[in-house]
Image (cartoon, rainbow, N blue to C red; front, side):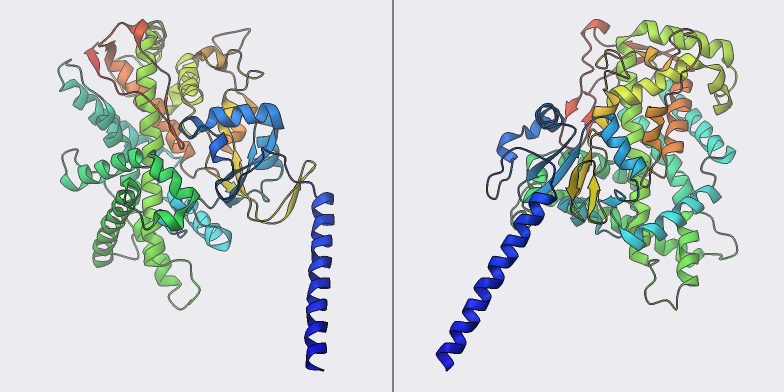
Length: 496
């Protein structure tokens, strides 16, 4: 009897497995998933990709598999969306479905999924709602933040003037100026350019930008469990990020000691007030750790991309002195030399506005956009995409779309000017959809203000003189897995 019982159980298990297999196979045939290259065990498609120029590899795959396809980075499955139509359909038309944050193991290790950038679900919704409201309360998108940018532009111009027309790399000057804008919002004040804590913070950020591009950091995303036990630059990256958190925790502690709940000075004070309001809620998303992570998210997001865009923009403008000359004529005509640029000037400066937009398009700073994920099982076009699948909405494929931008590999402000009347700025609907969607950067409007005001203030006061013949300047990016970076350079800022 015992033997018969064991045999019966074995047969039932076998039949169950067979039924499950049959059901899975039937379901997988009915629910067609996006195509892609053949994968290998463990490594996935890594051997078929050029990790030093991943955007180019994915561009080639899109020609073979279409605008929606699948690749495997080690065991990690990723669905790639390539081209304007596919990206818009996902991020705008089905924005709710694609509103999750993709789970990159390195980001998860560094940011702990507690800040606004990497969190998901209810945590993300509450943090984003609070952050947007608080940033508006402290001037984001209003005249008060514009005045802070103008003040910082004045400090930047004077700092450049003190170089006395000697060549130098403007990277640090630009990152310090941009960082001070977001610092004034989240920390309550700007830093002196020589402040040791401030310099240390910027140095850590610069070092981390380089470390994120190393091979070891990329491999971490594929095999995090193994890489946790191996030495390398990824370990330095993790330690540096913890130093960031120690810095923010120190400022939070100072704010707690001097907090006046009736008069919040900045984002941290507002968050501390929210924590106090939810003190009795054991499930509250508003904790000291979340504050520390969100503060760091805002600092990094509000500093890195804008300062790099400005640095890249000044490199590009050195190559095209005729563009600078035309911009300066427009600046002199509309603003003159005696007052600071303001956002109200932009509508009367179509060429300068077009140049600023073209800089952002051409630099294509984050080719993959920030990875997304689908929050439930969905149907996208003719394909089934399971819940939590990571999504790469290729921003590069939109910004370099030859249908929308003739000769997209060329830097041409005409891309944003009316073809019939070059004195008119051309609003492109498909370009601005990138500024919409569920997870658009909270500081997008701030970044556009900074780029316009800083760039205009610099060219109002200085002419750029390269250290080499302008025809020999290489404006192609240094490509990494995460971002396109400008090549290092020095430049003379000659007073006008």
